[in-house]
Length: 212
Image 1 (cartoon, rainbow, N blue to C red):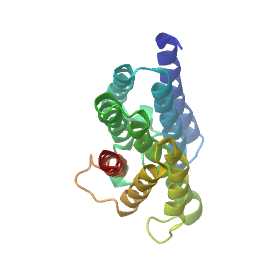
Image 2: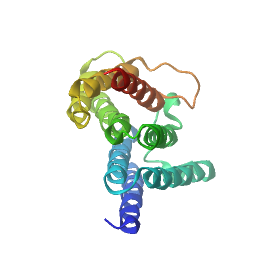
Image 3: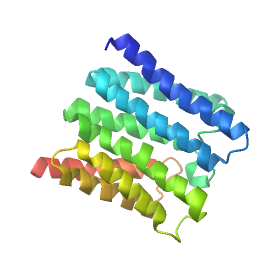
């Protein structure tokens, strides 16, 4: 596909995720649910970047999108109201998601040359963590009491892990991502579970890929 058209499609998809999540939020949908759409479409935008663009072009396009999100967030967080988390540890979730995803692309695909190893941690956040958050918000209504959110996340992550060969490396990344989401250590307000998931999954899969 022409790179200009691909870039336009990626930007449109990411913008649609934020715009529709804002509309849902304004119609009374709780932020813990409306943000799921923004994250899911954000993950899809990164998938298109991986499929349609060369590695460093993908990093540049998604990096520019991330800078735009940061600028909007600093100028007026209300413009991202539907994509924001509703817990103290999620105040910058829409920013950390994009930053962690771009870092995964840069190191995994740009430096290591591993397209799917780079994308998989992004899928774990955009789709796996999303599944956990949706179950937690709609069924469990709690952070730690139930294992169902983690089970949902692990199922989604294992389904996407087929993108990496051999599968067991992707599966190990899925387990690492689910564990990181469950434990969720706090280093600072800018280091949330988005960063935990991407960092842990990427580190585990990169190490296993290197020694396999």
